Length: 256
Length: 256
Image 1: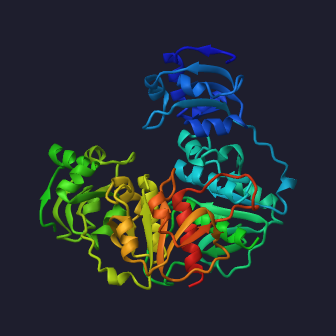
Image 2: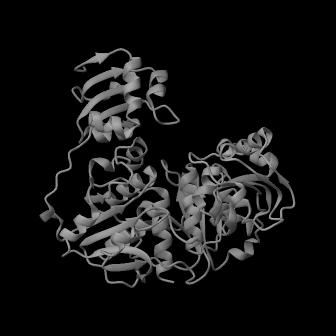
């Protein structure tokens, strides 16, 4: 039924899976790890799989030749390999997809730009909502959380297979593509509920604590603000960055 | 300058702070822990503080009599006491505020209802956005994440001091207050961008995996749906619950 089957997950393989918690190892091997039956099955449809390890019952549902190597594992072995609190029934090691992009494709569409997002959970949640709102390309500064961090992968809930995430010099990107409008949420921005929003451009979301960096702020052509309620009352100073990204994307799309 | 000052954080106190990671200890003592200078200072304005522990430099900025006990601590002691990866400069143990509510206050306002939210980060993010959108009361099923979980407290970014969170029997609550509309996001719901939304009612958000429970679904009077884009394409199956809550609250408030 399988191309290759070993009957247990060796200590060495467990160590290798766990090592993918660190970016240097992910970069070295060009792989990342995903956990849980639903997520792994979702990714099998679109990402090349190096290793699948799972409970025998679960592996029976996997089509043959789904992965270069398929290994039966005990709950205890899966627990040892897992980055999660609750041991998954299935773990997959996938090759990182290559993100190719012709910048000429960018015209006429909406894109997200992440300027120093730190939290892997926020990062994954933003990839998931981008997928929901039909945003196919996300451009990240080099100091943004790694898309292949296990916590990020889990938070994307599979959207990692459909959204292209590029790590680039944001200054270069926005300067080279300066025919497209650049939107950013800033305290002095225009009420987003009343602003005219086109169907193309870059939406910049900034770091959790510091917001959009000064260099990138200079390139923002349209400053937007999500009003609190009632207006001008003392509430929280800001919204979580994934929440703000969601509201902005929803505003762009509700008019489409 | 301080009412009480000890010169170091004893092992016993470190153990006591760390024990507040567990709900049974939080319930036993009636307290919760908050970490980081900004959050602790924010809470000092509104919650009674049992213990403040911080670096000497940071404590110098604290008004006298801010807490029943103020203790100078070394970075190492703070690291040991902390639930966070990066040791904070200031840790506070606060008494859990008592949440009183007259149900007659509920009329004419918008409220959130959380039906089994599991993730403390999602829970805290929802409290933060409720504060932003002027929602003062959140009603949670008994199986919803604890508002006083340290991860939740941190994710509220201080909004915990301004939003009232009640753990109740949701069935009872919604049945007793059946003059108010009950909104829920469900796949078969009406396009929220086109729906008429009043300024009062309950907005129900369901569990991360299972959504709104069947019993509570029966009490939803207005089913809403956040459309994906482009409509009817294959994207992610759902949005993160805090993201969905944000979009729904934003839709209610943008018309206010």
